[in-house]
Length: 283
Ligand SMILES: [Zn+2]
Image 1 (cartoon, rainbow, N blue to C red):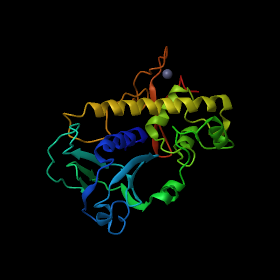
Image 2: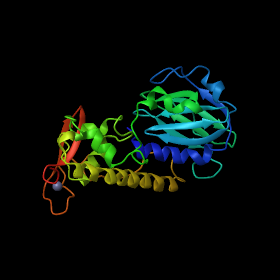
Image 3: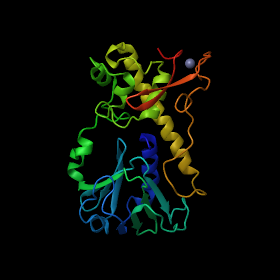
Image 4: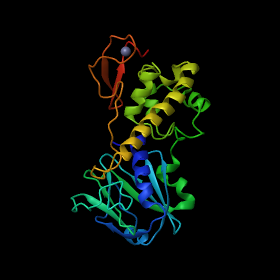
């Protein structure tokens, strides 16, 4: 499942082929994904110039010249592919149509953007750009972890009195938007905080320490995604997935990377999700 850094990599990969360019023809090949597509979506997209691509949490927002914004979420298995890129960053030839190519944007500059989603947990919607923040999926989100509204006091207040585990609290999108399972595990490892501690019982000093580490972990992953984009010429044009090494995520039973630690990475289940951590390093 794509997390914030993967979504940011998709956004920054799409931006140079879409921004300032006109959607010559949009194809919408089915009525719905997770939810029905908005009415007449293909007509409303066709002929629009893309003004800007933005990201909010794990959503991509495509601002269009006519005053509407296309909201995109990749869901569990949604993939964006670019072909025919006039800038030569991606493969030039358009691939043959695939099963699950649900939305295809043919740009006037020759680029083709394909949204393929076998499991159809993704979503797209259209809304007025002016009131985009009030869309029901965006209005409930907490501050962006890389933005100015996410800071030490915010997190201390958000944790106050919380009886849920810190791992679960950090996954709560109302508290901070866009943090997912992988990066929460990594953040807790780096701050040596046990994922099972109750959020409200962690000393303020340790809560404060989470903020710069959350930013750092996300920035490192976004940088890794950025370098994957620069190396895309020979690839299949699919955006957003890149090799990235983790300290604990997916490393159950492996030697802990903590300096001087001889422990093994453990896996437990919290709120139905796997948590990876080191019992010795994280208290
Ligand atoms: Zn350890």
